[in-house]
Image (cartoon, rainbow, N blue to C red):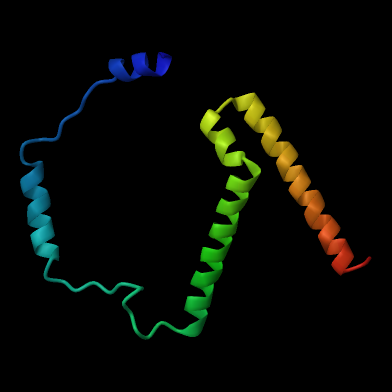
Length: 108
């Protein structure tokens, strides 16, 4: 409820009347220059593709982890103290599970 009051009190800014014309002139000027995109480039080497795939896999795993552990739902609820406690405990559990997994693979 307080957020709505704050939002209502914020000023509304508008662009200048010439803003649209300036933007359209810039777009027209830049429209003639070709741009290379990563997805359409046929000569992207193996290591670049591999790096992109690794980034995609890490982002997907992190997203899955956030959804599966309920951290995402905690972020939506946004109770700061509860969120801090839940994140600390879940991170601690993940770290402990990782250490346990590593110690079974590589005995010290």
